[in-house]
Amino acid sequence: MKIATFNVNGITARLPRLLEWLGEAEPDVACLQELKTSDETFPAAALRDAGYSAVWHGQKGFNGVAILARGDDLVERRRGLPGDPDDTHSRYIEATTHGMVVGSIYLPNGNPQPGPKFAYKLAWFERLAAHAESLIESDQPVVLAGDYNVVATDEVGDIYSPRSYLNDALLQPETRSAYRSLLEQGWTDSIHHLHPGEPIYTYWDYFRKRFERDAGLRIDHLLLNAPAAARLRSAGVDKFLRAREKPSDHAPTWITLAD
DNA sequence: ATGCCTGTCTGGGACAGA
Image 1 (cartoon, rainbow, N blue to C red):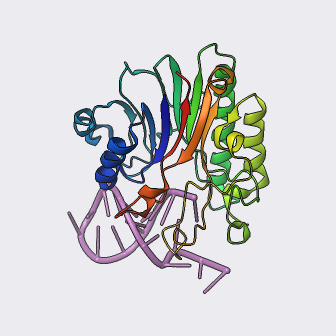
Image 2 (image 1 turned 90 degrees about the horizontal axis):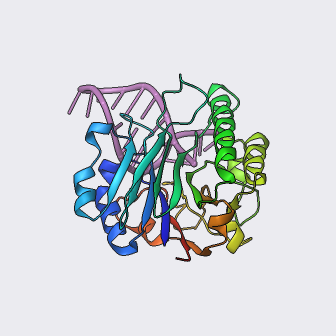
């Protein structure tokens, strides 16, 4: 069982890369973020032709999350996080498939900080933690996968160098503390668990030759509750896709679970 | 010291991203 998360940075512009990656990597489940398109314009037919059913929560121009699955039914169980009916951003969708609960997460970036965007990030993080608390004890495997917009530490496993990101919302103590609190509920950070300290990045800025220099960040994470973690076998990043024409600035990040 | 790129909506320039 292969489960992936991929911030596509615009599913319309990224459709060729997305389709070729689905064909090559063959994930059973794929969480997508930053669709940047409305519900009406989501390319469901092209994905269906590629063998994937989908649930999605779009938004015109920015945000937007989806879950794709093949080989089993995919049933949406929630769109949006509880706790703020006035939140208009499309940043969370949750479904059941293959006997698991899967959440696709696009946590707010939060820049510039301090400011209202950073406050929104921290508030959204609290709502995510409250919802995660309701999932952690599930007897079913639960996978919360997505772009958390958190660099967990200053260590080289998480970021090539913190120097040019010191002021960034992704590295702030409040952001890291929120992520740590979430993990302390009992979630396993898949890549960190299997590859502690290894520089395995999931995002590289488009400019300053950041990809060519492997000057990356690990901000896309797959969090597992105990029944899922017990089945964790491997984890990695499909860095090859970031090297192709018109790539996303993120690369697909994946785990495999024992069947 | 800095979105230096990129996508989207739009129709040229702003906004968002990290």
